[in-house]
Amino acid sequence: MEPGFLVLIVLILFIALLVIKAIALIPQGQAAVIERLGRYTRTVEGGLTFLVPFLDRVRARVDTRERVVSFPPQAVITQDNLTVAIDTVVTFQINDPARAIYGVDNYIVGVEQISVATLRDVVGGMTLEETLTSREVINRRLRGELDAATTKWGLRISRVELKAIDPPPSIQQSMEMQMKADREKRATILSAEGEKHAAILAAEADRQAEILRAEGRRAARYLEAQGEARAIQKVNAAIKSAKLTPEVLAYQYLEKLPKMAEGQASTMWMVPSQFGDSLEQFARAMAKKDEEGVFRYEPQAVDAETKEMAEPENTDSWFSTESDPEIAAAVAAANAVANKPVDPSLAELVKEEQEN
Image 1: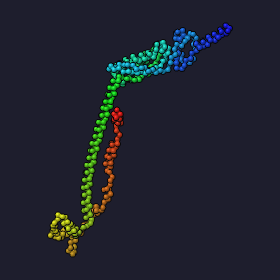
Image 2: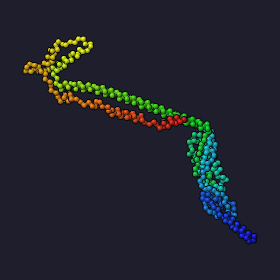
Image 3: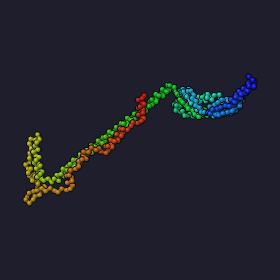
């Protein structure tokens, strides 16, 4: 093989090597830190970058997308000397890749250590109950401390969250017992209030029933008295309208006399000896003497009011089964109370107790 051909091959390989060393392809979402002779020169982001062969090199490629890092549980002692395990999740983004490379050896480890230290400082001043109910306060404190400490590293802390706060098993058992006792207490209170409300409603129902029964008895007595009075008026008006004469009354009296002796206890009955004289005196007092010397009874004229009273009345409404509107309204109100749904909170507590 000729020397000139070997030189040509070497030259082609050298040129290819120079091209490879002079071109760097940076993907989108990444940044590359470029050094020249071991000294930082520039930072390039996604795209095609040209380098000086054998002088420039890519020190590191940094992911500039927002990253979410979950750290393992850390044992933290609260103010009341209880140890809890807390998991944290940190969301951050690299704004300055050069600082992230040259400012700290490992920014992930740095973020974790600062998170643990800040977490122990914050939770150490709180009780267990405050720790469990103050997640937002702890998140803000952690984010503020991390953002201030990592700014010089070229990081931006966007979010810090406590993923889990796990107290010791004995404390968890005590908390569950306390919550169960609290639920039972609330269930007992609601049940007592329900019984009280039911007793009040029952007493009110009894009172209303007694009032309605009393009003019914009063109305019945009043109507009965009214009916008797009306019956007497009707009989009186009928007698007046019939224009009865003393002869008819005497005949009726004589007709009823035998029935007076029909009883088993009646062994003897007497007729007044002066009965005829009594009838004669009655006729003289109530009748007028005519031309023949006979006393004849002339009934008095009957006025229109008496005739109207003697007419038969419409008794259809006496047998009506329609309820009084007031009674119907009271029954409807009682049905509405009976159909009212149970308090949702009481139903939920009873359901929880049945499940437990």
